[in-house]
Amino acid sequence: MPEPSVRDATADLVAELTRRGLTIAVAESLTGGLLAAELMRIPGASVVVTGGVVAYNTAIKRSVLGVDAALLDEFGAVHPRVAEQMAAGVRSVLAVDGRDADVGIGTTGAAGPDPQDGQPVGTVFIGISIGERMQVLELALDGGRAAIRAAVVTAAIAATLDLLLDTAE
Image (cartoon, rainbow, N blue to C red; front, side, top):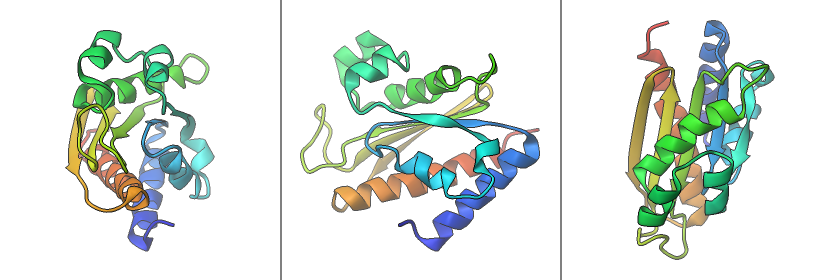
């Protein structure tokens, strides 16, 4: 269960999205649905959350989210451009009535216990797409699998809220 400060940041994010009339969609690999679940804990989130895609398998990142196959072949799934393309792709994949989601988040990384695609455990990339803006965070996290996954959710919520507040209405 996320820390109380995460729930507060999540509530703030949902409230800000609601206030602005914006929607959000998430594409998750290592977090496996935890990010979507955290957003959906907040009452009223159904107004802003269009949904989530758990793209744990690399082929799903390509076939569903539109991540570039050559990028995946060259660098693997744990790469900043993969997170970026996941965040951008999920916005259109989870469009509602022809309207893309306004905000997209993509999470990819190595949660452990083994390295992935040549990246050490704890290497994480979070892509955030808001309108024409894109931000990619690179994290080097310590801890076990559960701790890494929880930390990614915390970081994704906080960074998305920060970028949204820094984006003109």
